[in-house]
Image (cartoon, each protein chain N blue to C red):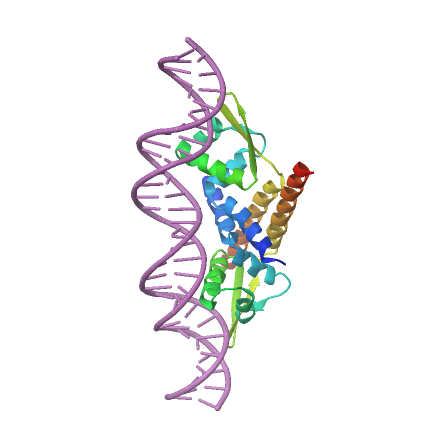
Length: 103
Length: 103
DNA sequence: AAAGTATATACATTTATAGCTATATAGTTA
DNA sequence: TAACTATATAGCTATAAATGTATATACTTT
């Protein structure tokens, strides 16, 4: 397989490699949301949230549209939620493994 | 959901967020391998490869054992391959989307 | 035990990320 | 059009990640 693919795959993982960005995606799981809803959910300043949104947008994971003064974001591709779910499964598997070691 | 979970999920994605580490996992898809097989496949110095292996090991994604002078690495949890496969699906979906725009 | 081999770690350097404050932009309302 | 609101960008600083060279460690062979 071409090394180019590894770079592109790594780019996707990079986009998800921050707790704030994971949380943003979680917030967008059931419905699109205005930035004004996302900012208060994330314990950081508005410009920082905006940067995280732009990272996810640049990677093609989110899209947005303007609605008056507000900007609405949503997840482009439901596959992303499968990535998030899988990462949780992996955590569970790790915990289970450790539990067995100490049991 | 607790923010702690987002941190742990992000940690997993961080571990995968480098082309060399994606490629290492790809190499370990079908069988365990000696470091001496992994190094020549990755266009970088042996100590750099060793660091990437240790990042994946620290995150619990890889395990290793010594076999004489050699060290054999393998993937702990097949879920990780599903993450890699999904990331490829996401790439395909992006390409397909762009293709349609220009069609 | 000395020399050799495979892998890991330490150190120094460079580059990339992330966060904050300040400011710009785009749209709205008075 | 002036003031206001929501969001994005710029500039700076601090922290983290990645890489290469040099060196240490662990094991093997002679």
